[in-house]
Image (cartoon, rainbow, N blue to C red; front, side, top):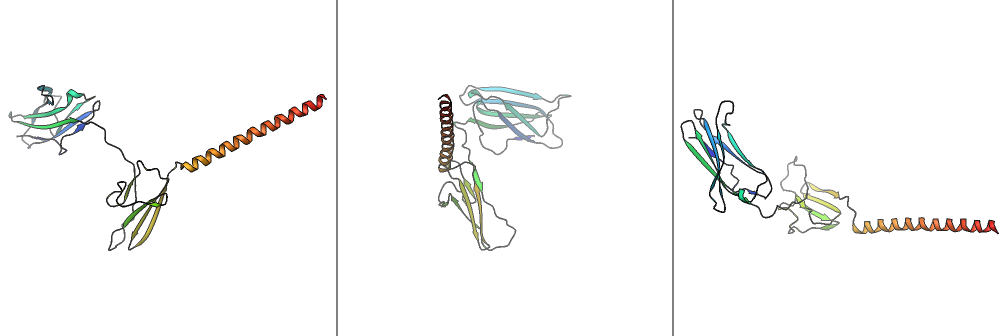
Length: 222
């Protein structure tokens, strides 16, 4: 009897308006042949079972004997529920597998991180200890911005400009730096003040030149 199974991923979540792709794999013996694959859906709201697809093996259009997939584009509220695939072999034996597809309420939160690594090509008795400094201030190991082993620093939401990773072990100390391209607020203010000063000096020079030319014209008339 053919065996159909979905990957061990639990109940997949999918956002409204997104694309859903369900994939299942077959396990059959050399003497078995799958001749029919049926997809059904039982809605979460109890609206009954809906026949989605019925694929049959035919000359010129053979069924894949290893796997099957079903695609839903622009998924909507009526597309969520229990999906069932039923496969039938040439002897009439059937095997089904179910998977529940649920709607996700909010998209996952993305994060940006820096990872500190050291070469692991030398024998040592201890493990390296990682510490991070942001703009010269050391971060506590209890902060949520650090991974459990301290190697990774999650910088999303942080406003630092200079990031420093310090690695200590019996082999010695190693330090590496990362500097963002974004200027700090003080640098932005300084740049703005410099630009304003240049513009003001340019305006004053123009006024002085215009005043001098006006004075020369009055001198010639008199």
